[in-house]
Length: 136
Image (cartoon, rainbow, N blue to C red; front, side):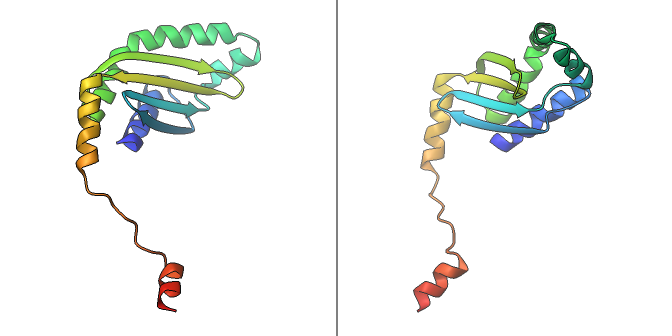
């Protein structure tokens, strides 16, 4: 699910901005889904940043984020199966990254964690080296 959220966020940014982040990673901690994306800026934004206009880029990204808020939260709701109750997003310069935090309905997130806890634990198969040591 987390890899699917990362992929969806990259696809959305590529479609909406004409360029997507070069890397993305999503983690879930309790009722929070955190997606960190590296190198998110377009060529035009990079030009403004290099000219010292970071506030302009941050402002434009903030305005756009408010307009697209529903599309971002809908994607996370669809992929997690939980309602998003709050959404926070911010850009950072040098290193260039974008972080989006989605807060899920606590009861739904707790239910999902209980379902995951009921799943049988998967133990990876021993490596060839471990099998060789056991045979000796």
